[in-house]
Length: 176
Image (cartoon, rainbow, N blue to C red; front, top):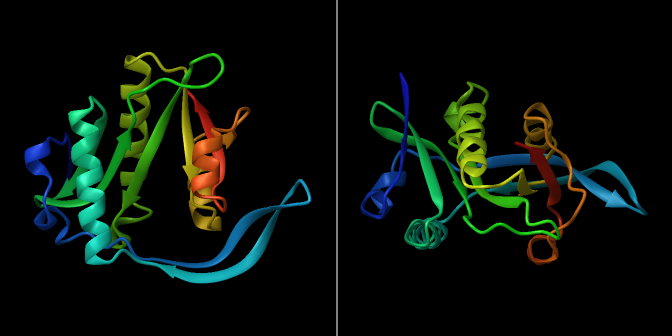
C-alpha cells in the first residue's frame, strides 16, 4: 500500500533513499530544432551517485526551511517517490510556482505514484497562491509523455534562469 506524507528536515538523510532507484535509461529525447520540437536519438543513463543524493538532501532541507513543499510516497515505509515545490511566485503576472522535483523510483514507475505526487504538488501550489505550476522537465520521451498526461503544455513564459540551468529540459506549465 502506498502512503504519502509531507517531509520535514528531520526526515532528510541518506538512509531515506536506501530503497530509491533514480536510474532512468534514456534512448530518445525531445529537442527544439529550428523552432520545431523533434524526437532525437540521445541515448544515456541518468543515475544519481551518492554525492548527488547528498546534494539533493541538502537542497530539500533548504527548501523545507524556506517554506517550500516536499512530499514523499512510501511503500512499506520506504521512500519510492518524492516531489517538491518552490514557495516563491514568479513570472510577469506572478502566477507560477516551480515544481523543482518529481521523481519515482525505477521499480515503481507506471503505477500511479507520479500522478499522485504531481496532484499533491498542484494542490499545495494552488493553496499557496499559484495559478500555474512551472516545470523545467527532463526531455526524455517517457518523461514528456508523463507530463502531457498530467495536462502540461509548453510554458507560455519561460523562466530564463531554469532554462539556462538545464538547456536540454522542456519548459512546461500546468494550469492549477
